Length: 325
Image (cartoon, rainbow, N blue to C red; front, side, top):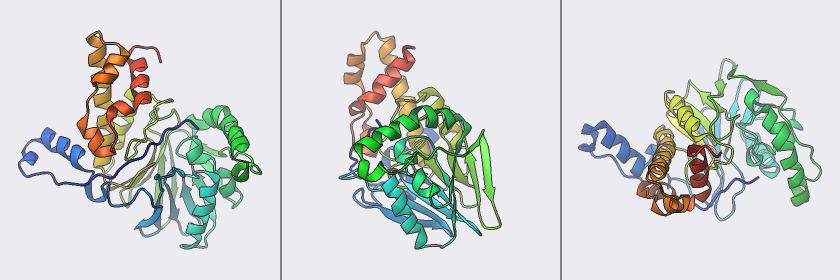
């Protein structure tokens, strides 16, 4: 897995002033720069893995990313007769998640939803499948699991034999084209594929009753964006559609939970990155000159990392804009 996950210092939250509210654009800009609502960065520690019950029967497991990156965030929803897991993560974290679930219910784990194929999100599938779960993903992710997931998993078996060695890759057995609904008298979860963003097969889990959105890596909270398989123009469109949902709580693929302003913050990064790089191209600057001239102070306030340090993302967008991707 080539996904990059640098360390992320926490950032303090500040409030939007009443004068800023008089201008919609100013208010939105300040909101994005200074914080992401009632669950902003700083509420949780990056050195801790925590479990929060966001609503009755809806749990969010925020994963440690300092000093070690140990996997993606996870979640689970308790239905009348079964449990739906969101994100298998790595095999060792799938096993840890089962322990956490058993603290809350003895109902069987029936489904595990992979937001996309990346190993830190889906390599734990065989652990959950052994518990009786069926793995679910979007139809657009099917080929990625087969063409990329399998060889990546085999590589991990060689590199991490203690964790992977005795396991066989857990390819999802259930796929949906655009939307799949799992519902009973207690819970409703909508699995939705909005389009090609972080990867071609990204999907999210939306809980309309509670206003909770599990975004996978379509939306993250910190400098975790990996653009290697992305279409950033379409990623902006995906986030635009996502923002139309009446979201109250965002559970990102990495980083702390937030509110709906996080979606706009993630969107803003790609909008401004593409705009700045295009302006550099129009001015006849080279890629190296563009890298040196990029300046987004608000990005460092959000992530703790200078935008210039996200070299992979800069190079990817440059290739997209010069039609070399």
